[in-house]
Image (cartoon, rainbow, N blue to C red; front, side):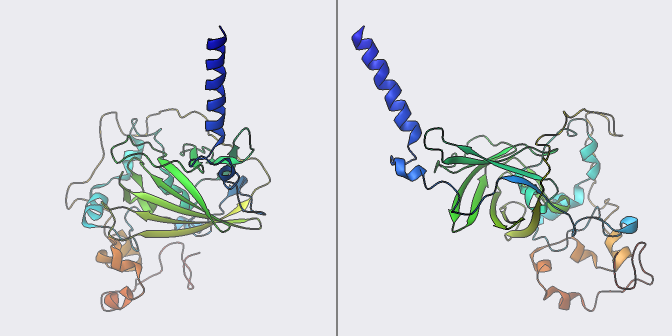
Length: 311
């Protein structure tokens, strides 16, 4: 009896020590997992969407085919030419979620809190709560490695974080295929790097997307959130599938040469089709020189625009 009891006590003690220690075996290391002094990311953060929403008449809304400034590869361009946005109305896709790659564009609120280690009280992880089309995302801070190359992928991926001075830098891998901004594709081989930086009641989120399949260069984006004193719903109501015009089993798409939206930006703003298709060179100011002789100013202002531009 004493031998059994001694063995049980030894197992319990070893488990407690293992749980309380950070990788590397030093209890002191776990004390360094928290945010630097004076930095707190917990809270309800909302994005005002000043640069993404549309004005009167919707003239500034995102168009079905507008990939100017995105470093799409040839595979990425082929994907956009065949893609029909009606796919979101498929019964099989209506309750699907977006990967964390969609976070940096600020479409959803960020409800952030930390999970503490129960003995030392230091954070083991930060969590971005679920919101509408997003699953909760755990940012592990305890030094654990990312899964292997052939490990299963999940919608939310696998995320680790480290502090660089007062900036939280996170790395997300093992995501499923998803979407970039403006409905461009993101493959399951992509890596997302985010930098969380707080200045008073402003949270700046800078993202970098590396995708060897659909991008030829890293894609960067930066967005600001403001602290909201009101509680943000961490998870939306349960999704209910309804008929939205697309029958089950059908995948809306466009065959080569049949996408009807390719020339919309050209007719509306005079932007050449080759620029609308995107590509790395369209990200840089020098690209304007290449388009100088091809740009044709619209004969009349598009609906919802003023003399100064879009309202």
